[in-house]
Amino acid sequence: MVRLPDYRPLQMNAGDYGGTYKLIGGALSLDFVNTVSFPASDQPHDWLDRAENFLVWAGASGLLVESDLADWTQRLTRAASEVEPAMARVRRTRAVLADVLQPVVRGEEVPADSGRRFNALFRDTIGHRSIGWSDLSWGWDDARTLDDVLRPVVLDAALLLTEGDRERLRHCPGCDWLFYDVTRNRSRRWCDMQDCGSRAKSRRYYRRSRVQNPD
Image (tube, rainbow, N blue to C red; front, side, top):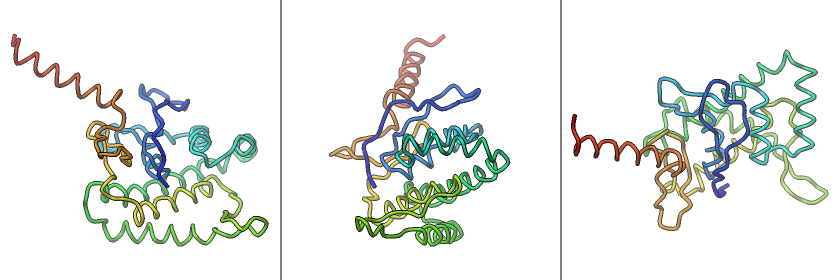
């Protein structure tokens, strides 16, 4: 459920956007919600605006292995008309997760409608969970569409909400990304000190210099 953040940028197509995406959330479901940069701004950037970016994200997140990625790339080429409807479902799943995780991170109550949508999604998801009898381990039904790949992400969100240390759930004051603080003394403040932390430090320096040296 919880993992160390990865501060290396993923090689996803950013289009005209000048920023980068990193797996800094510390949990699979948080990283998925973070595929929208600056979500609370008037100009958010959606990293899942194209299917190839979703495959890169899923591979880096451990949802797909290399052979799966090759297979899905071929499938998308053969069934191009099915790609956008599947990606629309991927983005809807992300919205359902965001609508419950974001208020919890902020210490707010989850809206009733958001909770119902998540529970409906969770019930559908968990119905595809099964035991593999060869090794007696948990597994998932084979994914038939792109949104099926997200079943472990939905389960991760449910476990994070019910079994995680909610005091460690934070959001970055610079970009509003969500993260799970794994530091021993719970001191992590930024999604990435090199990005949002550095920008905040530069702004503070600029304000101090303006006060000390007004025009």
